[in-house]
Amino acid sequence: MADTSGAAWRGFASDNYAGVHPDVMAAMVAANEGHQVSYGDDDTTALLQAVIREQFGPRAEVYPVFNGTGANVVALQALTRRWESVVCAQTAHINADEGGAPEVMAGLKLWTVPAPDGRLTPALIDSQAWGFGTVHRSQSGVVSLTQSTEYGTLYRREQVRAIADHVHGLGLRLHVDGARLANAAAALGCSLAEAAEGADVISLGGTKNGGMLSEAIVVIDPDTAPGVDFLRKTSMQLASKMRFISAQLLALLTDELWRRNALHANAMAQRLAARVREIDGVVITQPVEVNAVFAILPRDVTEELQRTHRFYTWDEHTGEVRWMCSWDTTAEDVDDFADAIAGAMQRSS
Image 1: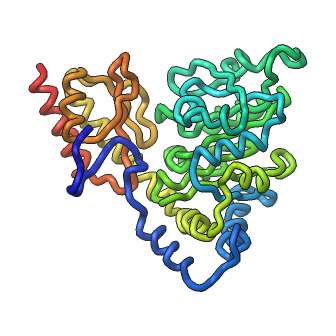
Image 2: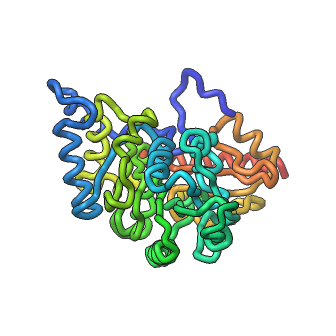
Image 3: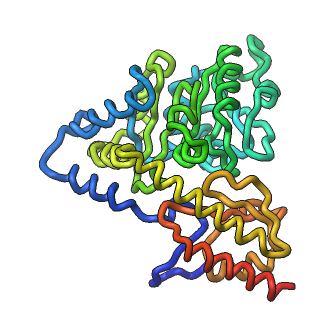
């Protein structure tokens, strides 16, 4: 990877690399005035609760947490009974990128299905959601999908609704990992709730979209996922000074800052994809629908570029890489990176 010590630099490895949006930082500064009751009984968290109900429905409950893995693990614990398991794509973050946390911390069995573009379908769900009543097979209780997916692909609203109807028809519950739900809703031109329509519980992400640590569990109907407040504590996700997490989420939800940030990140990915498509020998492997570009290029080119730019190799076997754009990625950042790719490809040929 590139040596970035001691220098101002821009990366395409992750939208987590970006800093905090000024409005979010200002909201935390404002929340720093005076004393507030701890552990969520503060004015800022109460206001966040009211805003979440405006966004997600009159019975919705919000539980701010420290990070996305914590949101997913607590949400899945609340949705499952001890003998139940979770159906998800093989590429799902809960399966591939959370260090086994659902298994280790929640004791959950994950039934995974191949999904080459990251998206589940009712048929794919059925390939693992079976054997109901058979004591020898872990009972499927929850389906978890990611919106937008780990491959930067989108579920259209009708696809999410069809999956929700199918899942509920099987007597299961639906969890949406919404680490990048803002990017999905911005791309779809809909609300956050509509991008996850039919979900029982949503892991609502803000960190990747201009927050510092701004994640939350949104329970649409408390009867479906009881005990989140207790599980959040036992899972070490209960913040004593919760108002600072709530303030970030409030800032992102105010005047649709979340949408503006996400639209910009998505647009920068489209710009990067357009530039890369002009470079002979680089193959874009997935539809560019949000703020991610996946591509395959020669290994020597990847190695050369990674000495000066930060990005991840997604698949070591195929050489597929991932380039992420952020709320603060500029057109100049994109063009400079695209020029570097073109130059490395020319030297390799």
